[in-house]
Length: 370
Ligand SMILES: *Cc1c(COP(=O)(O)O)cnc(C)c1O
Image (tube, rainbow, N blue to C red; front, top):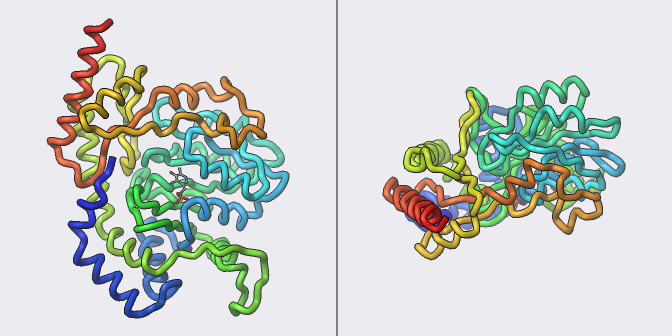
């Protein structure tokens, strides 16, 4: 699905030098690379503050806690996402309230949002799924009217934009994951909270570092250990300089797929909402017979993935919330039909053409079988 070895070959000189610098300094937690990466990523997102944390799940969990979300509270989010979105809410003792997604963009349906708000709602958490921005204008309008903060799960959408503004900068805070397979990936786990709110940034930093007060010997709140480490920050600083050009190539390859697969029956291609620029984290197609298409592609040496096979309200881990099949018809349907084919910045036009040819060959043989 991606080729991280090819990516490293292109960056070897830069990354090796950056890592050596950290090793020579022997400053493995905190230090100049962590601070510099926070500043550079905040500036990239168009916000004032960024706080590095250990991973994307912690970014979501800690920022909710910093916003005061706790037991008895509700957070409205989607079920068509990675399980971490729901975990972050439950880990704070709060209850996720799942709403359905738009059929076209796979992201939170703002009309459903209004109906899910109660006196207990303490945050709204849209997910920019597969790199495509959620429809922030109507989401922010509902949030403002009710005085509820919005936390963007931007773990799949580094660099995605609505107009000229990057995701992560719309809500009270944006949360990013730098898991190796994301558009901006570390060499291990890493994450980031971005925000314009200095006080919120301070609370996140404090919680992520054992509740440290003015000195490391004062622990003013019970926190946790969730720090970005310097080796990861050094790798991420190098890669951030390439993110826009990588996202540009992803976009070109997505257009190549669209051109090669246009007009095929029984296949729905991903589209961008007007005014949005997707980060094209994944190229997600919808087909009725994804198991057989995936088997055909696999037999021809082409990787595929199914994100997701089950919306999280139907995951056994969330059974205590009482979700049942039929609660979220669009999310549930998408989890039966959506699959991904390879899309990464090192992918060539020819590789896209070969995948598209195999999809067409499968489709032709399916028609012949019918
Ligand atoms: C990857 C991901 C996360 C979690 O990030 P980790 O760094 O793996 O903890 C959260 N939400 C979404 C939508 C993700 O894709």
